[in-house]
Image (cartoon, rainbow over all chains, first blue to last red; front, side):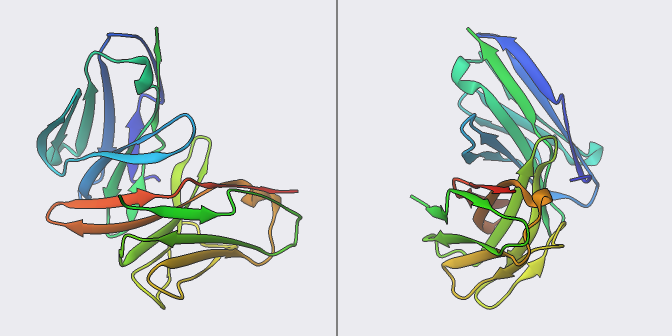
Length: 106
Length: 114
């Protein structure tokens, strides 16, 4: 939706490179969360990061609420990381961004 | 493991026909959601529900109705399907605590309206 903007729209990497995905939201948003959608379409939650920095495996998310942005950093990308990464914000109604399509080539 | 199932997984309908998409969750979540996903638009919220008997309009409710007869089941109804409703539809259940709000998604239903 308009309330959540993601960039870039698409990204192509070589295996082993790092990825940086961006999500921008309005000031009233809460409960920032990142999701992964596989090429087959299934959606899973990656991590919730309303503020600060969170880590899980090779993923690091940093949310700076004052600047209304959240980033998702994927280190040492693998071909299995290919898919679409969606950012979701809560404005009392849950809004998703349009996603970043990541392609990791061997 | 949280589970959200959808049926049918694929559907071809004719313009003007009635289509019902069903969703079942075994997570005992109060909240359930229907989204559609089209290229370039991410997930757009159609209807959601806070519990049995409740339905609320999301971002794009026109042309859709919803029904929540029980905690487990949430249906999306297209009374008069149109080709513009060709899309992939996702159902989700959700619950929140602290600063997090978890959603669990079904596998999606691909709807084609001819």
